[in-house]
Length: 298
Image (spheres, rainbow, N blue to C red):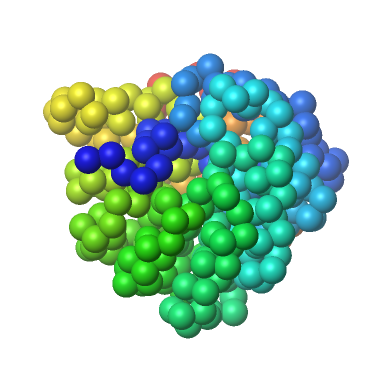
């Protein structure tokens, strides 16, 4: 049965924000979006966690949204991050994304102020009613400090504007409850959980490692869709090791930016309070990429 936002089924990539000398490197941003278009990526998700949205200014956030849409040229869907712990700010950013031509908005749960479940419901309801593009509820309690409980998501699913969930809780029972009770399009928010989520009705992934291996991520999705479970499991085991060993080295996006540099696709520095990958983990990363079979330049 088709889900509510079936056009987003497949591979979405949470792209990094190239930063150099304290500014957004627009040329590199366009280059990496072209890389994703060539790989056949379904959607790009700029200015999310991987895109260092917490340390971008409002002007930079808007710049990355508009430049991503311009670079995509309609060849891949664009679902930028527009969340905030301020409902008014989240509405403003989501309205900006809609006006700029975004296909949907990825809205993380409010962080730090830890609202009640009713507060979470009212927050997403206000955003959904303020725009006409689909909203993807991004549930990542390890970052926000508050789980959006499945009962709350089931209530949100009654709203026309709520179309997707980026499921990053790690709780398969929660994902299953959402899938059993709604027609929302559920996307994995964790690379390693992609195949398990597909098996219970998930329709894709918002991937971090897709910044470097989008075609490999697409292969696991394609294998599952054509019913080749043996091949999907084989790919899962290989990709699981890469994701575990790469993303376990430091907070995202520190390792993925370091990996892109090693692979000749330098996107510049991370912004404080994030710091570059230290010497020990850098050596580990080199081995991880080499063991996977990627052509490490340095």
